[in-house]
Amino acid sequence: MLRTLIEEFLLFVLPFCIFAGYLVIRRRNPLDVEHWSPHLFLLSVVGMVMAIGFFIVAGWVSPRHQGAYEPPHMENGVLVPGRFK
Image 1: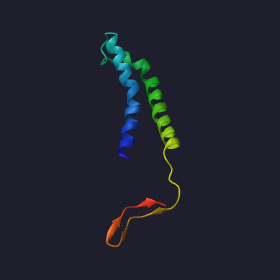
Image 2 (image 1 turned 60 degrees about the vertical axis):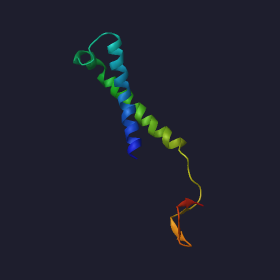
Image 3 (image 1 turned 180 degrees about the horizontal axis):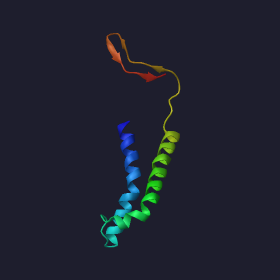
Image 4 (image 1 turned 135 degrees about the vertical axis):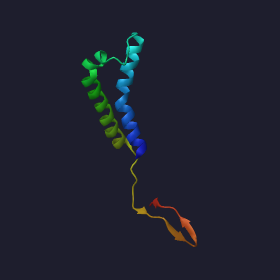
């Protein structure tokens, strides 16, 4: 679950990193607030759309298990891991 949250955070931050790279290429200081102010709302919206879109796509294409779940149990003194029947 933590990996999924980290991926979502990185997708949200990606537009900001790309814009900072653009500022560096244009030889502007990416730490100046004057360069970020007009674009901050748009970058936030794009980041949120990317993160939410990834949640939707990941939920749509994730594998679904068919059948009932059999929990881990002991069988003849051996631990049998859980599985789907």
